[in-house]
Image 1 (tube, helix red, strand yellow):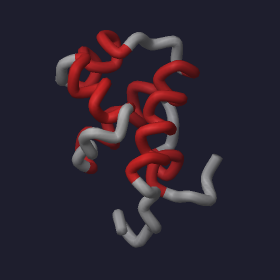
Image 2 (image 1 turned 120 degrees about the horizontal axis):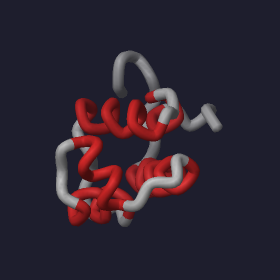
Image 3 (image 1 turned 180 degrees about the vertical axis):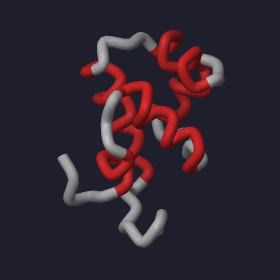
Length: 77
């Protein structure tokens, strides 16, 4: 749980990170620069090989202009 919310399975978080990035019109490199990571880290998040810490998930939400709940709450679309 994150702040009292049900957390998505990692595969769903990965899918939503990729979807949010694409909807924002960002490349993996651009998202990575926006959150202070490498494009390899973003790729690992999007493929479900790595789980972003909450601090990075918040940054991803901010950069892609999505609410944090989009990534953490299975009932949010």
